Image (cartoon, rainbow, N blue to C red; front, top):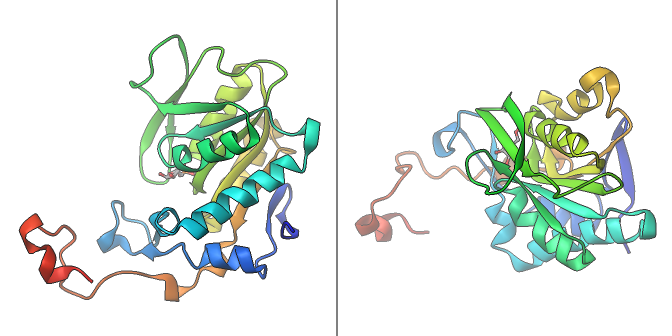
Length: 235
Ligand code: HSX
């Protein structure tokens, strides 16, 4: 049975964090501190904890799929994933639901005629994303999928693109949110509340992930180990 859905805030939902499946997923979302992360952020969640554990990965996909399948004929018509980590979770969800997967790609990579989000700020970079003209259209109901929402900059680019193509965002969905950056609040406040009623679903509440999930190695371990030195540092 699907876990109960909890409301974390206005139009912001997650699963009941006491559910066994949800706890299993939460216990496969480790994080690293700034020294062992590609960016200077307090905790960088590492979804390889999920992708490298087939049970956790399958559970995540099944939970998302059940959620959208339960909506029946009124459910989503498309899954759109953000470059790059939305490309990991989006396709298996779309395949299970037998609906198209659409790429929201970083600029400079896609062929064809494109629409652009324009430049936007994220937690640690300035980006620009594009979608192919015609990849979604009026009447389509699109789930935007990413691994994580921080400032909401990336998500909002997706909202703008889908909206600009005439389709409707059915829901924004990610594994986790960084609540102190209030990305969800920003989505709901954007453009005088144009998307204020759009559901945002973040499967795991970050309060479910404690300091025990920190994975920084012993002091003195280099960030990058030379190929020839692997034996010295391998666990
Ligand atoms: C990370 O930044 C994630 O994979 C998301 O795509 C993005 C979230 O940051 P933000 O745009 O919400 O600040 O690379």
